[in-house]
Length: 225
Image (cartoon, rainbow, N blue to C red):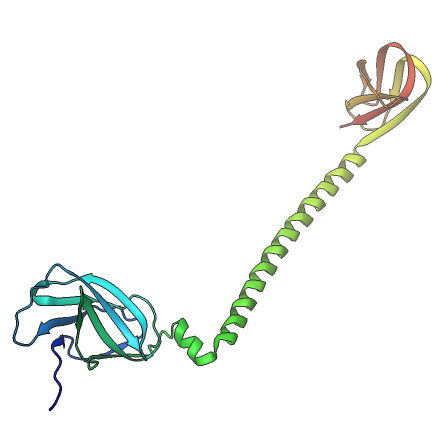
C-alpha cells in the first residue's frame, strides 16, 4: 500500500529552483487532505534542511487561504534542500518530498567562493587585503610626521637666519647694540645665570639700539625679526 502524507505543502511557485542570493518571495500552501485548515494569522517557521541539518530558517505569519510566503535573505550553499514548515506542533509536509534547489549565480557570493577556492585561500586574500590597508595607513602617518618635522626644521633654520646673539662682556646698566638685521628687531636679554631681564629698548636706527636697566650686569641679547 502506497503511503500518503497527512499534511501536504503545495508549491505555488511554478518551479523549485532558485539562484544563490536571490531574495524573491516563495509561496507555499499548507493543507490537510479531507480537512479545511484555519491557520491564517498563526506563526510559521520555514526550514531548509540538508542531510538532516538546518541550513536556513525564517519565521513568518500564515496568510489567507493558509499560504505562507518567505524568502531566503542570506547566502546558503548550493544544493538540494528539503523544505519543512512548522506551525505550532504541525509539520508540513508529512513526507520529505518538497524540495528546493539552490544553484550558483553570476554574482558568486562568499559561500560559492569558499566552495570553489577553499577556506584557506579566502583567509589568505583577507589577510593580504588587511595587511595592505595597515601598510597604507602607516605610510600616510609616517608621511605626515615627516612633513611636520620638515616644516618645523625649515622654520627653525629660517629663525636662525634672522636672529642674532650678541654677548655683553662688561657689566653695564645701558647696553648699546649694533646689528645687521636692517630693521627694528625683537629684543630678549638673558643674564649670565640664564634668567631673562626686562629693560627699556630705544631704537636709534635700523642698525643700532640701546637697552637700559636698573642695575649693571653682563649677559647676552638675542635679536629676532
